[in-house]
Length: 221
Image (tube, rainbow, N blue to C red; front, side):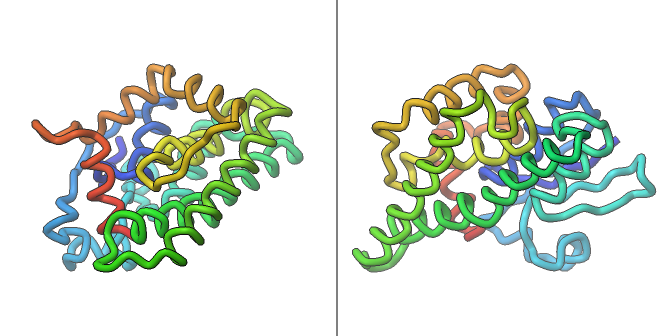
């Protein structure tokens, strides 16, 4: 059994979708980010950085894993799925995973901050992060023109990048002229495990998904 500490954010969905894809049994502990529950001492004992998601793998001596990329690698290695075994293919999947962790997530997160939440609008910052987010999405489109999925076969690299790329509208970034990215976004959205993972945790009554996820992004960035 795995305990997942999460909230409705792109990084949170990375973990829940991967758990659903792998069919691993897990229970969910939803954190109230607006109340800064992630900054409480009990949670900082799990993740000193005070961010979700975090998992506790009770079948691996209660191993605590924080950082979404590390969680995805742990789950894939635990099951020998969603991460190629062959060295070259494995490397390719990990490269695209790190592309999201170090690029797509941070740039789109900053685009969210300056486009949606900054107390004053700073055109240079808005344009800089939206432009860089668009450039990174173009990189994905170029790769997806060559292969159905980022590492050839569907993997944790696709899950990680999809969870952020799908939120491009909230960042104020259009994907016009990126047909391969659009194809990939639509195809992954239809996967049953992806649909299930995007409902963990469930949407609060009366609040649109984009609003919930954006609220989480505001607090986490």
